[in-house]
Length: 113
Image (cartoon, rainbow, N blue to C red):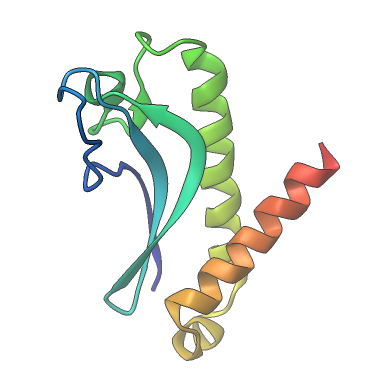
């Protein structure tokens, strides 16, 4: 079964920037069959702007309400895609195939807006 999680990708450490001022990409982490793949969002946050427990952007981030709505919509869309696939289909898919489907749906949704 696939799992989805919003996560601040702190593996990337910008050079020449202090840890307090560094920004990190916010990603949607898709895990399936013990392999994880990340789908980037349009947001880059400082550590203090991200709430890991609630998986949400703190108010200290500019336009936090709008950013949270966009990120939660992306997460919800990806969740719907994984739920629409049957268990048999998911068992036969790799995480790369699943991410391709999710990205296709997200791109189509973005074009419609």
